Length: 248
Length: 345
Ligand SMILES: Nc1ncnc2c1ncn2[C@@H]1O[C@H](COP(=O)(O)OP(=O)(O)O)[C@@H](O)[C@H]1O
Ligand SMILES: [Mg+2]
Image (cartoon, rainbow over all chains, first blue to last red; front, side, top):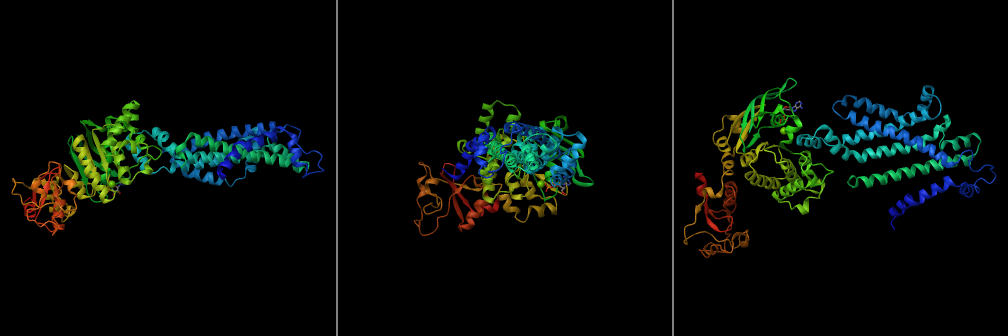
């Protein structure tokens, strides 16, 4: 068995199994963490079951990432059409500026506008997740050479046919990479939702910070990290299954 | 038939094509030549409306090109470019089937059309149909480029320096192959090139352009023998007579063999294998060496009656011969070509 196969087996079977175990059973955490924190009274976060926090977390990520994907790819397509090309420089600089903007700052801006809880978190995640998708959609579509465009036009493909039959298939790999990056970033960033009461895996982290309980912090951090790795591997696999020729 | 009448094109205030009139008859292969920047590409792209004219009219098959939607117009014409532009995510088969799919042909029909075209270009379908463009050589890729342009069986083919990026050998091969295919299909072709030799070899008519205007439109023979002005003469170059030879075939200038007293040289020791030259029914007189000198000197190659006189002249000079035997397509010796006879053509 090669290293690569071993890695993919790990990602496919071992990691999901571990993740499942960690969110369903508190005794596993006891076994893992007790030796490190022998004197800690509350070792496992118990005000809400961990799986419930995972569901909240997944919900925030799914909603914000779906929105970001729809809007981001749409925006990327728009600014690479002849009608939207005048906006391309603006969007490009917004995207590179946006990435230097910390997500907490987005949260701080959106709370006064829409209040606490779920909504501002979704807005922050959506805005933050938009950036890599727009950037990769643009660079993927722009990488389609002028000779390809000329051939497509000369053969009588309409603009829409050129987009869907030629440009998107050629850019798909890069666009998908942007979506994956966005989702992974969002899984990490979604933990800040807990600071404004949106739930999710940030909850034990915040609780741990407040009550000086490193075990709680570890639980939130380990679970959101594992969650990000799992989702990334899953999306990678789904993409390879869907477009075999996009690899190579 | 393609008719351009007093077509003008300005990019802003800059003229690119001026007062351009030309009729390309059905089945004609018209080459547009001229120095870089003289407006060849612009002219070609106005025919399929990838560039709109500033003024003037273009008619294709009797209808104004603005009567159709641009993409419909383009589907009725093949379009081939130097950079080929095969779609990298599609196999050879899928690339060829793009236009048939736009026409909504049923799958079987599109596929068999693609097979037919691959055969036509001497690319065995079993070997090539599932390849991706990156697996093809430049010459193979451009063959697919031309095949793809022919897939929807258009009457018209627009080609912009299609063989310009190929090495000389593949270019010559593709030119030959394209001529053969054109003699079967009789498409109406507008072929842009800056290579005079290519134009002379391929064209039934040449339109020479300078600064957006057409300077002379004539058959290659007339253009070579009666250049209208200094520019034409300079552009065609100092090898006019050689270029004319490339329009003529060996069979046009050779002397036919007369019975058994042939004085043709044999082919033993030549660089053409005998099995290549003679069919089983080959003329035995031609094989034996009448002077009995075989092996003592280079007997020289055998010319093909169908090859062009420029090549024949090169071979005569290269082998230092006054004459060389000529064989027909069956490999039978037909006659001979004499150096002095080339002076008369
Ligand atoms: N899209 C364009 N915008 C402005 N000028 C152009 C454009 N396309 C071509 N030109 C100009 O028009 C002239 C003719 O160009 P072109 O038809 O491409 O020449 P050729 O194909 O003979 O080399 C050139 O001077 C070129 O710079
Ligand atoms: Mg050009």
